[in-house]
Each structure stands twice: as structure tokens, then as C-alpha cells.
Image (cartoon, rainbow, N blue to C red; front, side, top):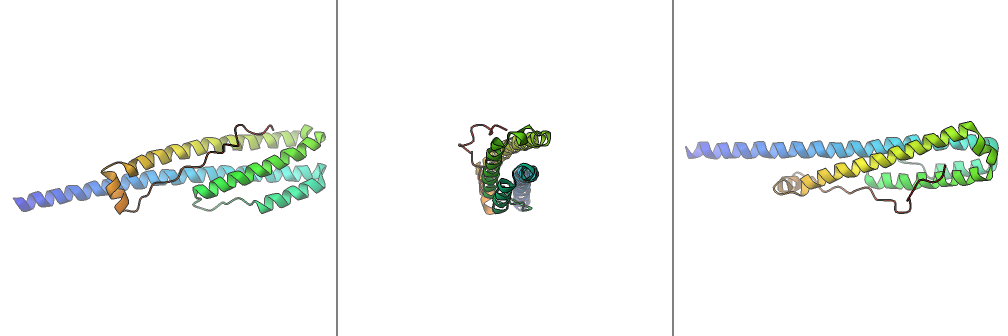
Length: 181
């Protein structure tokens, strides 16, 4: 009888550990997916900035060449599994590129009046909004994951299975509002 009780307790413990592990994996994958979604939006924004440089070249060849060099120097990461640090670095690079493009456009009123320019800038603004929303989603999913990893008794299993607390994406305190586009 004692043997049956011990086996039943062990079986329940094993089932519980498997259940906890599955929940942690699910939440970890949701975090990974949310991070990848940000990366996808950043790549789209990068592509739109590239298109804007090509358009700028028609109006301001020298400045466009300079901008192209900046873009090449600030290549964004598009790894299959981006990290929060890579996403933050991408965001800084994209913000710098966008700021320089806007500064060039200010010097060329005919460029700013061009419909293609206006459409491209609108798409860049939309990508920025998508990135902002995706960042919020990621930080929300990290909150849920971190709660699970840190709460007792799940924290015991999480530590044994290698699940660690994840980092949030950094807030850009310099970015109170989007640049005027």
C-alpha cells in the first residue's frame, strides 16, 4: 500500500513538472514570437527608408549618397532569433537614419512636396507605430513570462530547467513623440 502511494505521489510530481515545463515553454515561445514581430516591422521600416534615400537621390544626389553610407553603416539585424539588445540597437539606428532623412528633406521643399515622398514618409510613420505597438506587446508577454518564472513553486522548476527571467525592451526616453514627418 505504501509503495502504491509513493508511486502515485511520484507520478503526480512528474506530471506537475511536465505541466510547468510546458507552460514555461509556451510563454517563452510567445516572447520569442513577439520579439521577432518587432524585428519584422523594423526591417520593413528600414526598407522604406532605403526607398526614401533613392527618392532623395533625385533631388539631392550628394546628401543621398551620404545617407546611403549612413544606412550601410547602420545595417539592422535580421537574425532568425533577435535579442532584446539587437532590437534596441536596431531602433537607435533607424531613428538616426530617419532623423537625417528628415533633415535633408527640410532643405529641399520640392522633395517634401513630392507625393511619393509623402507616401513613403506615411508608411515609415506606420511602421514606427507598428514597432511601438509590437514593443508594448513584447514587454507585456515578458511580464507574464517573468511572473511565471519567479513565482513559487514554479520558480523551483524554472531554475532547474534553465528558464531565466527575460529582459524588457528599453524605453527610449529621448523619443517622446515621433519626428515630424
